Image 1 (cartoon, rainbow, N blue to C red):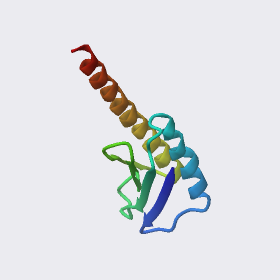
Image 2 (cartoon, rainbow, N blue to C red; image 1 turned 135 degrees about the vertical axis):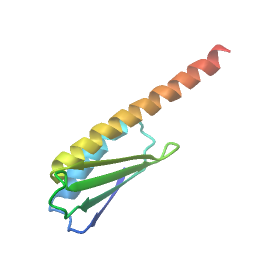
Image 3 (tube, rainbow, N blue to C red; image 1 turned 90 degrees about the vertical axis):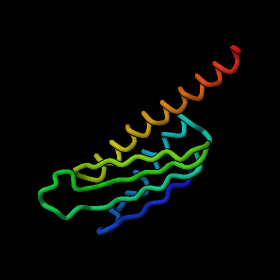
Length: 107
């Protein structure tokens, strides 16, 4: 799976590309048709906001794109939260696809 990283209002931390590849790459077990992941990080500079790191991930391939947006206090936590959210969305999509296939076969 190709992973594209981008950042806004900050620079990408060192080693983020390997961490993102390990974290996001594990999602291929839910849908092997996934081809590309776009990861965009941005930092909020407002001191009143506790979760300042915003991570948006869009997965392409295998039908409709899957998109999630999560916030966290630091980059590793935010990537982990995004992975858990994407796991939930991909599992939901897989269940819906299997349910539709099962309904079509019983008619």
